[in-house]
Image 1 (spheres, rainbow, N blue to C red):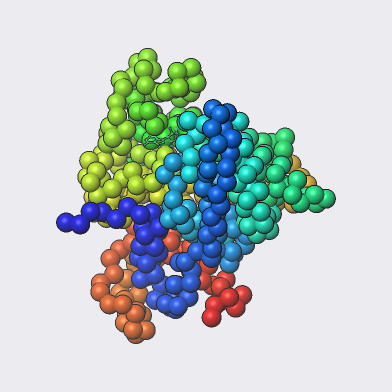
Image 2: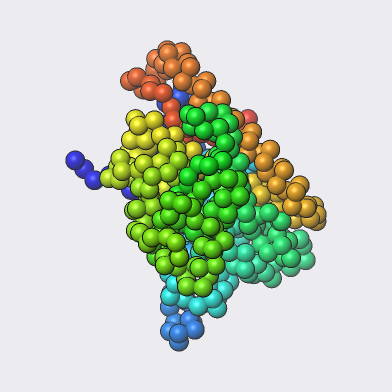
Length: 445
Ligand code: NAD
């Protein structure tokens, strides 16, 4: 058997291809245009690091689509950043913004570096030089960055400051989101990705996605990744009545069938730099966390964590993707066969970009909304998006014969249509919306 395809951009394209089978009216040429990124900018620059060396760093910024609005997407600092990873993440942003119906397209950026071996000062220098080199590839109405893996509000403040110095005399706050609140950030943005995931999980349970469990009360949860998204999800799911039975970060994991107190986990990580060694828990590997017996598994770290080679060992009853791209198509197939619903990234983690949109609106209007307003607007958007995807799944699966007949009539590819999982339903919603706007705007043909 050939090894599983793990290139995230190939995977992102395969996910689109699958969705296109359920959109028989979608012109093949339009679909090809929608799948491809508009552009990829590569920059390279030297930094004098605090350790005394001068090193060159490579950074990328991909704009996938601006059909529905300015490009939007985070900046990642990680040694594994590649052009195809950035392309994949940018395209997922296009589909994500479309699923929650906010007026943004998709983009993503990254710098190849290992923050663990760089000082905070080095990261600030890298940020300044990266933004200077990107120049007008980003802008408040063209392409708007945000935080992602290993970047945070402090780094977003530097992005803003650098761009603002290059474009004096106008309100540039909207060039980046996820800023500190006192530098034009939005209340609630830090928690937004995890809070949005919580709302989606609660709505999915209410709608019967997990048989016999209509609320989170008493459900067991395992979380991979304990950074911005996973760490805050731990707190919010615990507050909502779930029991945390497994947690991990890049240094390893911990298990406790009796439940892990997230406040104690945060304190332990702050003190020791790791989750391992927590009193009352047993240390374990990252794989043990992915394979822990639990009701809901939340991958909140990186891509390709659930693959063909480990999916059958996953014992969760449901998966909520707060990371981008954690599940490969082979793993998706395995979960679908076993009746394990996967709430896909482009829906489950869209709370972050939704509050980023609110931040951008506040910046453009010079307003500061209070946290209750941000959270209640977020909840409305996320519930509506979850309902949209669940309704689409039901509608497609209830009309497979009609869709098949339509495909045959239009001479599209042949072969039986299987029932769709939530990912494919979400892609159908997303691709259909972007296609419609491309046609209405006359971008295609
Ligand atoms: P982060 O840098 O704050 O945290 C990443 C966490 O993952 C860290 O705890 C790290 O130790 C852990 N990790 C790394 N490799 C691991 C491994 N092999 N096993 C277990 N843990 C590992 O990043 P973040 O902002 O929390 O982002 C996490 C994921 O969520 C990414 O996929 C990101 O694209 C996605 N996401 C983030 C946001 C956002 O607003 N920050 C929004 C949507 C999606």
